[in-house]
Figure 1 (spheres, one colour):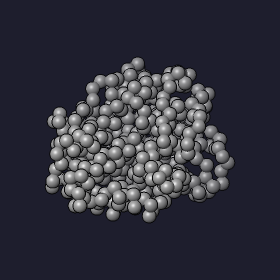
Figure 2 (cartoon, rainbow, N blue to C red):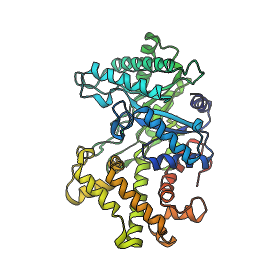
Figure 3 (cartoon, rainbow, N blue to C red):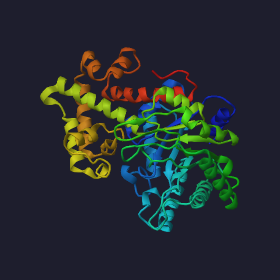
Figure 4 (spheres, rainbow, N blue to C red):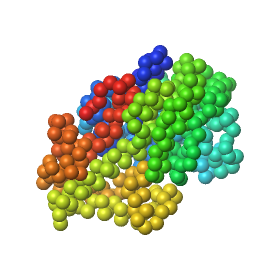
Length: 435
């Protein structure tokens, strides 16, 4: 993937640049990402799907990799964003979704997953085999993780060749190795202390993968291993954020300078300040991942629109927020393992938890219908600017400044753009924003 390889070369030469990826399957978040990239003049937009969201069984979105690609392309066409400026990535691709199975069965499923992602045109592939399966020890030895990653890398290389991309001059995949601690997508429990990955641990991950890849006949693929996922000391749980402290990661940051073409990828950067994001990029954690942070911003905006509708439409309002909460209580499968509070505290977590488990419920048909009704109501009878200012001040400022129109979708997307502004400035050396 030449665009990413070139950007990493610029970073390794001393330029404080990087890239961020948006890990979301929500159509408004993806549309906002493309509008933001257009307005900011970004050369590309990187959108990633996780192995839980999108896999050969449909994941929790109901989409297979080719379905997700087509879904993203349709949104790009609607937003007027060229398809050749879209980079697709797969996050935590490995046996993650099948950990309850014995390792060999889970890895067989992971092989299909990787092949399908690459055949569908995904070119940034996170090879993550760090999780223990049903018959594995915990934790897995580094060499076992590396052997499984190499096995999946070989599948990816074959899938790329078999799909005809190699003969057609298509770009070969780039790879990310390693994983963060705690688990992907934000800590499942309240955080105590958070340990930064040690330089020795990061070095061991890199060196064992390089050795195993070489022994597996993947020497040609190793130069396309662009990054290693580590824990730089950033995380969030349900109610608080652990901010980036550069001094705590100084030794880790320095060790990657010994490698000519590798940088770090930082997960769970959601809710970090713009200054912290810029510091992460400066310190070689130059690939920033954001997921719940943008869907949390979307939920804030949708709650604001619900409040506007209630005041403006009164007895004709859709009841969107109440419907969402009722559906979450009726179908608790996406949050029951994570939220253990009761009463008012549970109501708080269902709506406002930083892990944003509410994002799993947006595709629910009843919720989708309620959202369409709310948008239709507000489009048919636009609220006055003062009411928008009261509940959606970020969107009101964007309307006032002529950056967006006043449609409900644009008002919601403006809050996602505000989050993406911080990422754009961080990866572009503090230059500009889309606002």
